[in-house]
Image 1: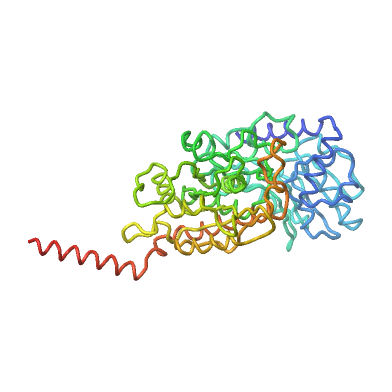
Image 2: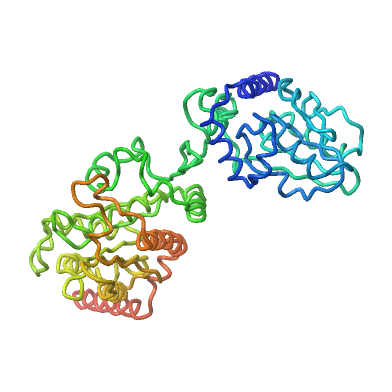
Length: 485
């Protein structure tokens, strides 16, 4: 296995090194390098085909180099060696070690050199190097040989020497069917060089106990179609797009919330359950469109999102508690960990359509308040100028339902101007604006608060007055039963 791994890595990187060089390829490689902190000046100083876009960091950028000896383990095309040589100047030296001959036959400067060798057996004397760097190479060394790499690092470093490594780490052990798959082992090169890698996934991860392939540009924790309930997906997830290639939600930088959601999924094996309500029955309902955009954000963050359609819900009365739509709404509320409410503002307040839904959700069921302690995010859409009348009323309703309403809120003025005209491409998608950004803020905050609150739901539902009410009912029942004896 180790020899096969070395051969595959050597072959793959050799193929990349001899690829034809197009303007488009050059631009992509520049973008990748700039994303990791390489400056335009640094990149402009390099010979052609030195930057192949294969970095996963910028070790040169944080190694604090001066006039000293630098060793780059797995120097590849030589980008870090040549940049290090410039930094250490004439009083220093930069040495690159690589097992691919094509990579060691590079153009070089007077204070640089390249050695053909593996990084677990470097032909240099003990205590001969001041600083050792490496950029996304140690992860490619077979697991059985990794200890030898670090022994070499310790052997080569001078007393007081230092190490600067940019690399990829696994958060948990990967199963054999992943680690033994050579296409995946060197698959991250797909990011810059799709032509030399088999089509398929790049970065394997594990979510909810299942293998989930995530792509570096647009990571998502959304429920895969293959794992979703077909009936629920059809009925409650109208926000799912047929083609997500141009979805603005997929391009959002949501690192903090995404990491939190991934960790919680791995730990609890349970997604946040979110009920989304909107407040209009119009054919083109802006509260519905905003609710669907909010749902897409939440879905990407790993939530199990269900959108309730208020069409057919009877006006609140005292006789239709058994109506199918009433029961459906109540069951969804009981199922959920939190709600998202989006109402239009009409005549300075909520719409009747929205308030009717809240009226059907019971405040109490016996001595239990089914919404107590759940989180709530609120938003409104306005036909006119900016207003907060509806969200203020939503906040009051949330308090009445004993829900924890997040501090942030979203209000979109002149909502019709935030969507393309009906019939135009993307006419159901929010256009870029500060209002759209605020909606993202709210959904991100909602997820964070819900993760914090969910483990303590029973704690927030434990109230003195309700314990007393329950005790009184039980005592009354006990006395009634005793009287019958």
